[in-house]
Image (cartoon, rainbow, N blue to C red):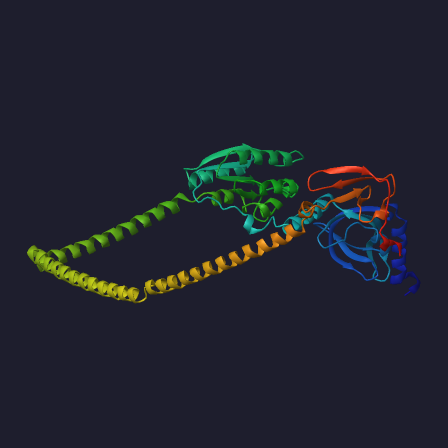
Length: 450
């Protein structure tokens, strides 16, 4: 057997790798799928698998490409990748060497949805305290939905079957597409202005793209700001949108939303029957108790002879009257005794004697004070007379009356003849009048010539 025609596994793998690397359809491939088995290596490389509904292919993205991405790849994300297909020689498996990766359109929407959900949750929009209570027996309900869908017919049928008394208003609304977001917001505002008891926002099942209007943040905030309680029934039971977290009540389906909005008339009828039976039983028991009591009273011996009731009560009244009279007399005696004691106490403690004693002391002190004032007044008069006489004896006027006079010059009163000289004018004042004269000669006293 000739061995030269047999290839090694490594040789075959190298050949296949060469073929892969030379194929222009494999050197640049564009794929989309869902990430699976994502592993972030400490070196920065990312290992994962890309799958769709039918197949799976291994992939690797080296750190030099991974470092430039705007998001972190995670399990279940829908992505679009660009790269090349080749064979890893050590394992002989073909795989995609990814150079670019970005979120698929719906993946980007999911990423934004998660951000909005996290933000609204942190700000308290999902809190139970903001949920408005639903009226137990609503009179009017507004349904915001599409008139062409099967969901609206099921809801109307359910409401009519369960609670025929309710009045239903339907607002036809565009529920999917680029214009649906604003249409839903506008019609929710219109529904809120009608003043009805409940608003049901509902849509039948569909793809995630069909239901995406109800994942819009603006729609959710509009639901939060409504004054009317809102029940949401979007899609099927497995579909949960952003408005479901914010609404006052979330129903798994549109039909379930209708069931939550109104009570079942059969339950109401059953409760009414139970209430009627309960009231009838209570009334029957009360009537039986009343009859028994009436029979007992009618057989009471005093009722058969009413005079016994009167005589007994009259005697009791007399006893009470006598007792009341005794108590009143006793109370009057106690009050009089206390009044007498108070009078004696007041009489003993009267301030009359003390007042008279103080008046006598006051009159004595007043007399003594008057005498002191009179003595001091006389002493002051005598002292004043002596002072006046002293002043009169020293008065210049009295001196002048005794024949004396005084002379004044230009410098005032002249005390020394040496202060004058011949020719000076002087004024001499007498007791009555004065004269002006001119000095003709000055004769000084010998005492000044020492």
